[in-house]
Length: 142
Image (cartoon, rainbow, N blue to C red; front, side):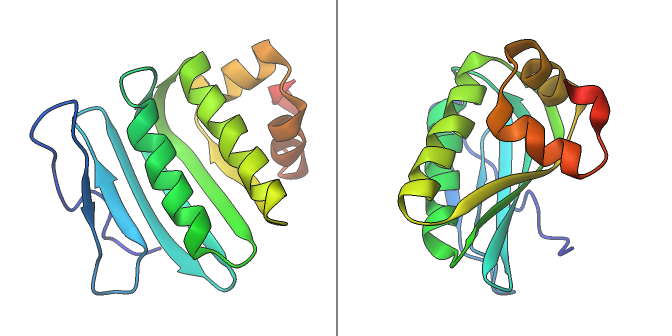
């Protein structure tokens, strides 16, 4: 995996920085509480997300994932292992980006998830993403 994650910083919690990187990555988006880097792999785009997914970061996350989805041919693979906190705002962003992907004949898959995301998916019994994690042998999710 490219080592370009977190290459820029935002000045305040309200703004996000977009950077197109020379190694062909789709971009990096950062804020004090959220970091997203996306890069193409074949016809899919991998989005590596770290930090907190909540009401303060939902717009930056939505924008970053929307941009990454637009750059992909077949869809997104999400690496959420670095997510320390995820509430219903973060979950709603994931569900919205999944619906958008399906409308464009693309998919969104969670490849890895930290305990915060796994716990929220289990509590909310979110079948759209629980199946993805089960497919990776993560039966403890639900």
